[in-house]
Length: 199
Length: 199
DNA sequence: ACGCTTTTCTACCATATGGTAGACAGCGAT
DNA sequence: ATCGCTGTCTACCATATGGTAGAAAAGCGT
Image (cartoon, rainbow over all chains, first blue to last red):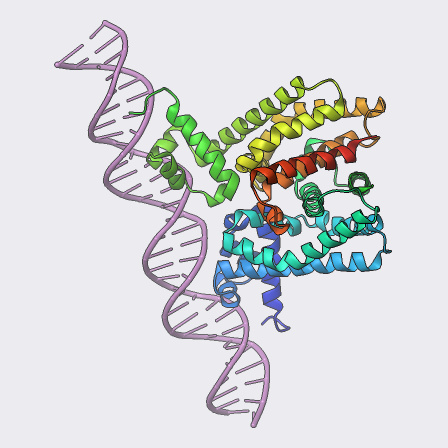
């Protein structure tokens, strides 16, 4: 019925990212996912033997996607830490605000079973390590404010993820998701982080 | 059976904050809450006519608790914005790390029905407005970096909430929840935010 | 055309969950 | 003692949900 190979599978993954990321894993039923994709629940269970394994696949795919976006941003930026950070923000914020579920899913991890959390943590660890080492070097070089590089990574992550995944918070300060609003948000976020990291 | 009046009710509220905050609203059943409190499910439904109304009560109580903590911190600090910010961090971080569910619950709001989110937003709005106005004034005074005060409030909130509610992220940078770890985290968070806000 | 594999669907099922109805117990006032 | 009120519990119920079993399509190589 459906055309290309793996079409259904990836459609299920995509819908699951959106649903799990925006409403949380346990608030979403297999029936609902199937409904969004337009197949029967059993088809979902054919591609992913259980809801748990679906979650695993969703987490892995999301991590890969985000890693690719960040990787590309870093690679295309000049070899200067503040410029690289700015590039990463720019690259991450657009998809994050347009599709809050992406980062929302990452945040969801902390509420899941330690098993799932550990699996994702392991997958992400090399990236975190590289980021930490890089920041550490640049701090030693005097191109960044002296601080604990690991915690700085975590703090920057928390800021970006937090602001991108909490429409509630932004709504409370009367922010609007218009084009100019998005531009303003990006500018403020960039300046905020750069100010926090500049030597 | 249970002694003082309202004892059961508040025990239910407390358990619900912890469970909803750490695992998410829909992942927690009334049976589980009742089990933690040590009563039958029907007792929970006696005090709160439905799971939804329980959630409302939980949200309201959490907002009040947090507001009180912040209020006290601001009041006890000298009239200088950076000192006040530092005081708020100090006051919020301890309960937040010791009981991640508190802020976790606040974060949970964005995944709930717009109704619940709106109710909480309305409740918090006056505080947000005051914070925004205060920051705006101090920026004009030159005691804080010039920026959009509303977004700065949201960003600072995102940073604190994010770092306090994501054990996963902290675990990824090999942070330990020891006493010295906590002290280090507080120092880094404070310096991070102050650097971001200093003129 | 025919068999073999891959994909999807139609029943079902066991269990968990939110919620209702109503009984029972403690207790203060009369 | 008994009435009435408050609080808690036992017994159910309807529904939603994750998952199983197996039938029907749909490709696809020969």
